Length: 191
Image (cartoon, rainbow, N blue to C red; front, side, top):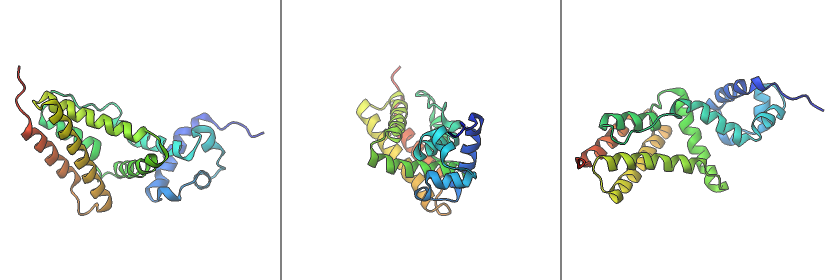
């Protein structure tokens, strides 16, 4: 019977797999191939994470750890909206942010096919945050929801364009423009 893997190795596994994924397509990654990258069998991966997908989810969470507590305060000004959009969807000139965005897209596509909900819940959280901001800035509720949907989809589109054509896309500039469009449609809230 094999001995249990060292629980302190979990963060090291995430770091090593993160480095590996910078240069590897997700479709080429299996538990066995990751075991080879780690110089071991697949057992530590299965023991610590349960599956390849759970390990990849852990890598995305690791890469997005700075976003875990990031909130868009509804009554914050347009500059805060710009900063939030760039923090959530931009910053792709940084290697780890680029990888997190790439993996999020790849996992999101797979998740829609296999019925998992993680990416859908994240998407709905973004919609709710932007809709709350719009409502606090004078949009009527249906208009706020529509504006939020358009803004989040445009932000995802800018992010995808930057993944496909990093040299030809200014994702942060596109995100600032999205924030400015939302702010220009905002009404002064009735006190």
